[in-house]
Image 1 (tube, rainbow, N blue to C red):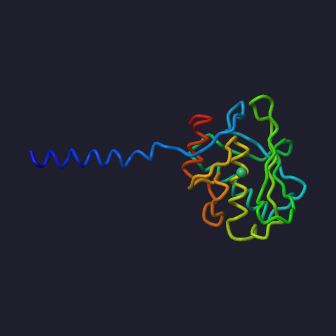
Image 2: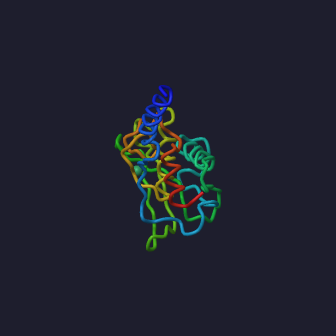
Image 3: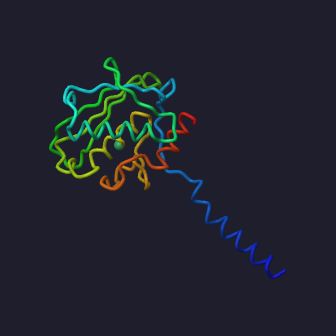
Amino acid sequence: MRLFRNLAIFSVVAGVGLLPVVTHAYTLNSWSWNSSVSGLNYRWGSNLQVSGSVARTAFENAISDWSATPTKVYFSYNSGSSNTFNTINVADDALYGQKYTTTQGNVILYFNANINIGNNDITTANVARSAAVHELGHGLGLADTFSSPAIMNSSRNRAVTYIPQQDDINGVNAKYGY
Ligand SMILES: [Zn+2]
């Protein structure tokens, strides 16, 4: 009898402790890819024609990072793609990247993602990769969030958080199914 009571108390405490697991922090834009995100294509912009640069390597890693997630997301190169990955050069250490999405209604037609090579922090290990993964997340229809841990958290430590996190994966799967 005594044992049963202790177990009951334990289960209540465990139940309360599990509650945060079901919450989420991701924010979704209203626009989405109309067809599946499995098979999104891209091409390199004018500044990233040659491999080996910090920004191009960052995008290459970001493509692999998103493609490796347990989501439908998969990117492949296509020289005729309207989705371009490129650089900008703006002397602004608060600007890591940018993304422009062209939509029709709530449907994404294409997006352009850029890494800011004018940011003095962009060559710090993992920072450009973090920026690239973040901008591709925008390209999928994820909005900025302010909760950690998430690649879409615009206040994240970019040297530490540089691949899609569980919250980002949950956001994509909420949008496109899995
Ligand atoms: Zn952002």
